[in-house]
Image (cartoon, rainbow, N blue to C red; front, side, top):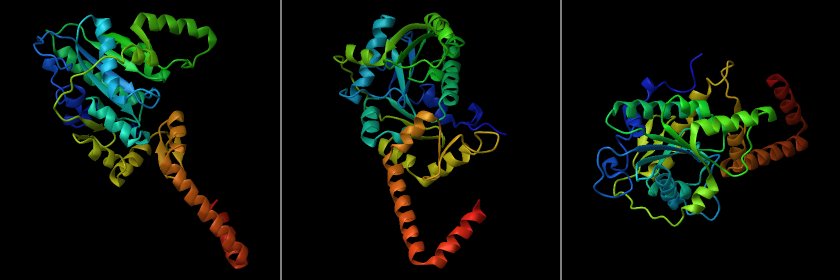
Length: 321
């Protein structure tokens, strides 16, 4: 059975260049911050922000998030650095207004619903490119997520970069009590700094950011497509072409050829428990659920007024079981 995600060799060169910073919406020679005169020996920070489990807190302008992250990193590194921020996750459940605001700040929107499997690809691509730059100083990785699988310390240790992590306040750690102290020890060894997401933002909200004049990038890791217009990217996520590609890939999730989570109402794969909750709360699912219930009520009323139709319905129902 083939894997449900693509190998790096199967991804388009344009998508790989995006994750390596070669097709970024910013000029890394100007250190992404918008200041001039940066030399070629600047640090480079790759930031992956899981929008599904670490959303923008209420009351925070999403256009300020990038400046907050970069300010927090500057305080830790001791100098301004080239920062590439990717907002990842299943972006189908994120409002269009929020996506547009995030994208307008220079953050790269990346529809990547496979979670850990997508993250492996991103980190591998980033690491491969950075290790080729032998004249550069040691670089940095930052992971922002509320999903412990995404924050697993050993995953980041193997790349040899300095690592930072941020997670929401009161985020539960899915581990037995006797392992919690060991996990805390692993976090201390692997991550140079741990941030609480809400605190990171509130402590740096006064920072400003000089935006690039270049167009933002949006990536669909399901369809292997790159967009420079956010509206076109959002339209793509709602398209039949995208839906069919997601269904095609989801068919390989388990040994039975079926996705682990699947919405029968919408006939659509869901990529995890949290995203299942998000899907069930989405406007599209609720609308289809109401339509389905209305149709069932209509069919029920028809069977009551037409006994022969009721017998036909029951016979078909038994045959389908």
